[in-house]
Length: 285
Ligand code: 3HC
Image (cartoon, rainbow, N blue to C red; front, side, top):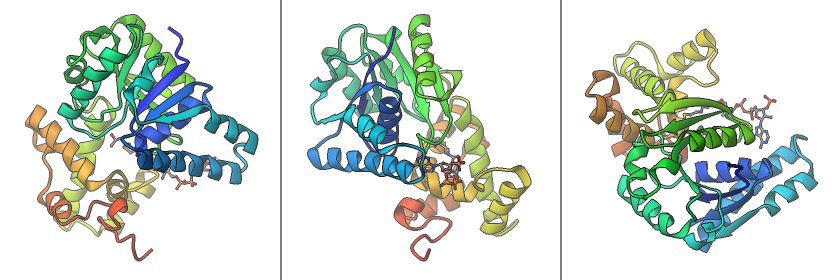
C-alpha cells in the first residue's frame, strides 16, 4: 500500500502543514477548503513557510517551486477521488467530521485510507460514519507540523494491520518519528501533556509563582523549548479547554478538569497568541 496521492481536508494551521510535508516528501497533494478565499489563504501559509526556509538556506528556490507545484487546491470533495490517503484537519466537531467522512466514503475508491488529525475525539467515532472501518486511522501531527518531529499513528478496534502499517510508513515518509497508539483519549502525548498544562494554570491560580517564573522554571529546569503557559498561548486556550473538557468527560478525573482561570480567560476572548492575548500580551510585543 504505497501512498503517493494525498488529500488534505482543511488548510488551517494543521492542514497547511500536513499538505506541505506530504508534498515535500514527493506526494501529489490535493487540498480542499470551503471557498476560494480559504484556498488562497492556505496556499499563502505554505508559500510563506517555504519562503522562510529558502531565506534560511534550508531549501532552494527550485525545490520550493517543485513542492508548491505538487499541491493543488479545490473547493470540491470530488477532488479526492484518486487519493490513496485522505487526511482530515477541520474543526474539532464530531458531527461535522462524521458528515465529512460519510460524504468522502461515497466518493473515494475502496482502497483509500481515511485519517483524522483529531487531538481529542475518538477516531472510532468517525470511522463508524463510513463503511471502511478497517481503512481508518488517526494521524495526529503537532504544531508547527513542519518543525515538530512526531506523529502519533492511532489504530481503532477495526483498523487492519496492513492499513496501520501503511499509515506508519506514510508518517516515516513525511519525515516524522512514529509513535503507535490505540484509540484512547489523548493518545500518548495529550494524555500526559494536558494535565501538565492544566497544573501550570493551577499553580498560577494558587499564586505559587508568576507566569514568567513558572515558564522559566520549566524551560530552564527541564529543558523544555517553551514553558507551559507560553505553550498554552501557542496551542490556544480555547483549544486546550476543548480538549480538557473531552478528556474530563471520558475519565472523570480531577487532573483533566479545566481550572476556573482557563474558563474565564476563554470566556473573555483571551485565547492566546492568535487572539493577541492569553497569559501574555502579544499586542505589546
Ligand atoms: N523552514 C525551515 N526551517 C525552519 C523554518 C522554516 N520556515 N522556521 C524555523 N525553522 C527551523 C529553524 O531554522 C530552527 O532550526 P535549527 O534548530 O536547525 O536552527 C528550528 O526550525 C527552530 O526554529 P526557530 O529558531 O525559528 O524557533 P524556536 O527555536 O523558537 O522554535 C518551536 C520554535 C519549534 C515552535 C519551539 O519553540 C518548540 O518546539 N515549541 C514547542 C512546540 C510544541 O510543544 N508543540 C506541540 C504543541 S501540542 C500539539 O500540537 C498537540 C495538540 O493536539 C494540542
